Length: 440
Image (cartoon, rainbow, N blue to C red; front, side):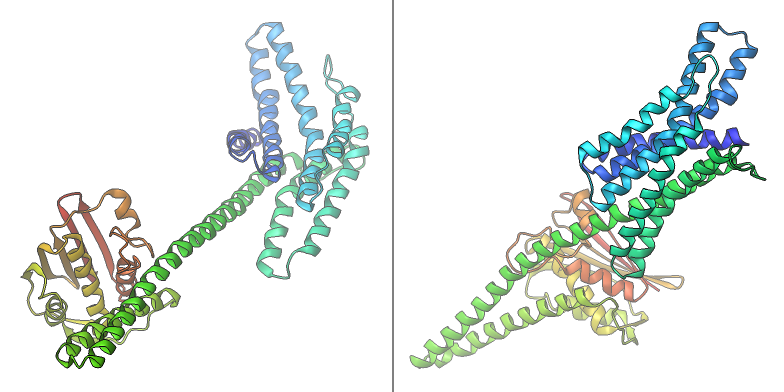
């Protein structure tokens, strides 16, 4: 059983530590953490060589040179895994506490290296535990002190405190168990086999470490992604709002000039343009408001889906787009206002994708307890990268004309999700796009 555990330790820890050492070279803290994991992986290799490979070579009458070489390697690894964890964990917590003087780190390595002189490798391997403990125990105590000092500096936020304690458990407990293993037989006699707990705790610590590492990386990635989107979104908003405000000012100036020159006959058209521009500006503000809402409140009512679709389509009757309707009457429980916005956004995207010319097919059918609604256009279509990002806020496949923020499909998805439905988009370049809504 012990061999199986240490085999798992070697197979799991070694590749992970090598991966971290290669990919995280810029982070000193992660490098030292990876070295601790690597040492744990070497412990698995040492046990495999000592308990499995060497006995097999002896029973198979392998060459004496090979046996001696493997014997020396096993003893060499044994010294490493009994000494270097004390050094590595101390340096790890020094970096964690902000101490990273190269000279000090180099001097701290000297006692670990001297362990090779005070321990025997051949012909009879013998660990000098008294010497190892003479400096290993102080190293471990200093590591605990640095850990405690760091804990006092952590923000009084429960989540951050738990994370910090988690880091301590990951590295301190396995090394503390190693200390007990070295003390056993010299200063006390343990009633249980301590060796079996080392690989188990090592794997548990590695699992916790991976959870914290992935969470930290994901959180960092998520924050960077959100920041980038905010920067792009802010730029788009400034551009769009400036355009809309400039248009409104221009319409107002035209009205003023018309009044001064008594050209009352054209004021009505100018007022209509001003109101349309104002409606467009209010529509953008309405879409932006959904970004700050974690949850949309629905006002559900029984509505005829065909009527809601007709109303959405009628908004685009002045365009050169032709519509093919493939739906009939169907009563559904929806928020009529929000769903109408949803349909309008999809159709608006399709109209822009076709640059004012083409056909949109709107189909709806009831399948068991669900209603499927499809909008298919004959526009330019999208590639895979565009499809993957279509629901991201501030992402748009359209030309940045200031007419949108790239919030249309984000808005659609949020509304459909609030109705406990699903949105699916399929597209091919040059062949158009199909947006499918499935409502319960």
